[in-house]
Length: 178
Ligand code: FES
Image: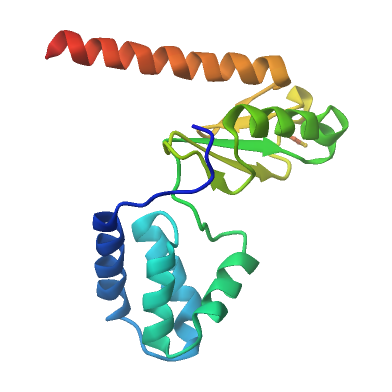
């Protein structure tokens, strides 16, 4: 689970294209529509793949690089598909003081990705957040919307181990039921 690149199957690319086209039909071709379109497409696909951005650029008759520029400018937009589990490392002041960047480095190393990326197996995506309101638990990592306090590197290992055990249990259960 340590690669950054996504060898997206062409079937998925085709689905993304068609899904984007359906959404585009509901919008005017004015450039003003760009952000609402991006929001809607991301809402549908979970992210903004290259093929979706190309469709949007063509529809609005603007260069693809302009679409890409807007997507990368705003934090709300994702270039990578969401993972099954979301990992958000708090870098607010309290967490920063308690080693938030060390925690972030631990997640980066364990998952083999940088913030705003997703592991190649799409199990995890990694991001950073500002204060999530649990400063007394610093350093905090929000795992699937649940704040985990004291998230130092050993805790990172513990969280990943729990996911690993959960996955193994699921595989075992499936094989027993088949
Ligand atoms: S700074 Fe991290 S929870 Fe407040």
